[in-house]
Image (spheres, rainbow, N blue to C red):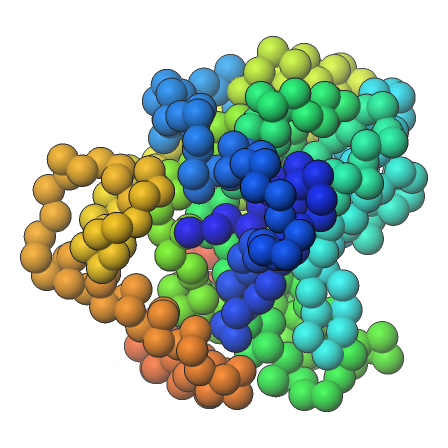
Length: 431
């Protein structure tokens, strides 16, 4: 049930904790019994244990407080074009640096290699931000790098809900008070890093970088919009392999660890500002991409308002209900309930509060059996070799893509393109 946030590693006084990876790429904390002094600090800051019931005390934990919500993009064209969506998170970090509000940002990036890897990066120069754009999607123990951040006076951190939960628990222990801004990302799940081995098997033996979703570009005469953004593998020599977004989507369930199945904090409850994709929100730019962002704290709202005043971002207000609907929050609650019960039924001795959520939720026998099978399949795959996992994954891609026949996919692409053109005509007419 480790969320691999890194909070335990950052607080350990004797460096007894590091992170290991299973064959399928699930990241987890490992404690050296030879070094550990049994101080208990790691237990107190672990989001999966929630020793002091901090995470369970929050109001409306599915949504939390949202002061104001927006959709839009960075006003900096270079940031926007290089972004996965609207580039507003990078624009926010750049603004914080320019105003002298931070002297360090903790972010992550994909490091190229024969199997690329997501790693934490400490940015002290805003020129470094461009290399850290776009999402990683695979596990990274971000908070482990906080040890290095101790020497900086003012830190911003960009993190998933588990990372920001870890920050909240660390600061409740009076640690890392130099963290001034928490920039959270919406997260439905992270995917075990073994999926990167699968991607790289399409370009074997190469040193490369992986762009999980590359938007608004043309390759060999085919245009890829924001909504059809594929996985792109690029070598330093300029060789490129494009994997349709269907490949990524068809492998999501296979590479989702059980811990993500019981996390209800999709909307990043403890952040100052939350950033994500504007799924389900009307009139967003499906071709070039935009960002959803919303303020949870007065500090976050003031920051957004200052960026608007200084014309660093181009934003319009959106209804909070459209966020809840577009992010399928009700479905997330239902998933949490059934997986909590399924994990509990497979391992009755498990103590984590995550496996005791929504216990009064009605679950059918077949639904529970399906989820139990999903969990046992994951455990089974985790015991296989990397080559076996890759073979299973490629078979899954073939199986899933047979289900979505070409004519149906073509119709969907045409409809998306027509919808975009019709909206453009309407906007021009309205103006």
